[in-house]
Image (cartoon, rainbow, N blue to C red):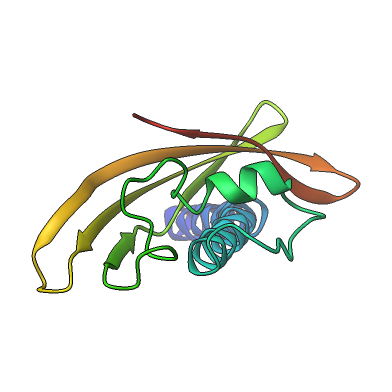
Length: 145
């Protein structure tokens, strides 16, 4: 009977620890990931212009997130070209007072006949965030070549 009471007590402690882990680490991680995902999607859809997230990301990084810098077939300048993009949901972890986020994207460019003329597969992107004035701010962006 005593062993059963000890097991129940250990189970309660385990559940409390898991609840604390969930609320203190996983939920904030998902929040930051969702915010980065939304910023990346918005940046791509408006070609990195008119940054509505100025308090979270600089115009320079916001423009880089659109992934169109130096791109050979820019659809804004060539309406016969279409782009198809897929982005993974970011993974965020907290380390040493900052957050690191990584996601991957694939992109295909098609001409007017539907022929694939260019593209990239599973390109990793690393983003660094810092907590400034109680808000996560994107401070660094690195896209692997």
